Length: 295
Ligand SMILES: NC(=O)c1ccc[n+]([C@@H]2O[C@H](COP(=O)([O-])OP(=O)(O)OC[C@H]3O[C@@H](n4cnc5c(N)ncnc54)[C@H](OP(=O)(O)O)[C@@H]3O)[C@@H](O)[C@H]2O)c1
Image (cartoon, rainbow, N blue to C red; front, side):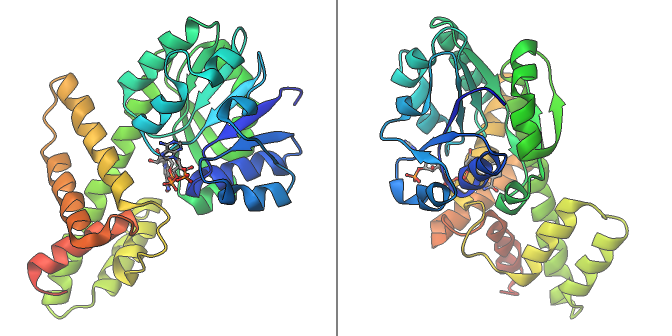
């Protein structure tokens, strides 16, 4: 690939995604607020830069994988140096899970500098990012979607396009994370029923994961619910709460009631209040067991 690009945000996901690009043999400039997180990438050939704007070239590509809307806006809103540096012909590929309106706002603001905004949130945890097995939802201008294709091929096993609206892929992502939250709650309640009835939850979830619910979420999260290995977190509960709140907010904007999302929000909020904000998101499953008195 002849493009130059930078990667901004080296958290649990960003480190693995940037590594895929380094391994593809491309020169990648990386920036992270906490520099130490770039160490492994630098050993593998990435170039660590001092400021976010140093990661971007005029007319080049900047990829962001930041925690939330606030962090993204802090670095990319309005006349942010990284955006003015990208300038005409520049492309920002935004891969965080954020509100659709944030994407629409950034697309408009970037355009004032001649730069494009492509929305590309991902499905898959850090281990999927490590092995290039992410699923990527994409929306934005068709020429930007085409331009980003080699990058998505390096990071993921497949891309789904949702048209020109820069917020559309965010809606798809929020739908997906809402479904995961609902599935984890459902499994946790079933596990509590099994445990309190003296039937091992592990056996019940294993059977269901191999039969009626033979799909990655029931299998992967089913294991997490049973094993209760919540640290270190692959996806922090605070970010899980953020996603459910984003889904509720996006639903409110179009007048859609989501009672199950309200329940998932309460579970995550309660988990954070119990000191589990930096545990893996799947620890929300503890709530149903605690309510049932099965620990
Ligand atoms: N983990 C998953 O399984 C998963 C899967 C799919 C999508 N996602 C989404 O991907 C995004 C990243 O998730 P993650 O798990 O990688 O999160 P993470 O490990 O918490 O990393 C967050 C990143 O954002 C940076 N950041 C936060 N606030 C900042 C600020 N104010 N200014 C500059 N940088 C800031 C952090 O910098 P520091 O290192 O300095 O803190 C770090 O690079 C989130 O939107 C998440 O919802 C996560």
